[in-house]
Length: 116
View (spheres, rainbow, N blue to C red):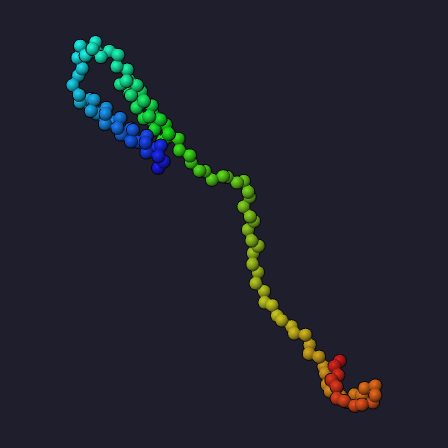
């Protein structure tokens, strides 16, 4: 709660208590009017209290509300159906190799692997 709202709330409580105390006070007599006819300050105080109370009511009524933005995107298409098939691995044929006696360009014989 902000300081301003706390101040306004406490002012509202004090104004309510002052009004309750004033209601229980004895009624004023007509002769008091002529003796204190230029007391303007109670009217100013009542106006300020009313302004604070009215401001608190208005400030409490206008609270910001977050609303999620609405997007007009189409939903994604459904995934394609899954088809399971057997996969067979076919190994390449093994090379047909054997060992032979071969000669190099100098005529020396050695055993070498010959593949087709």
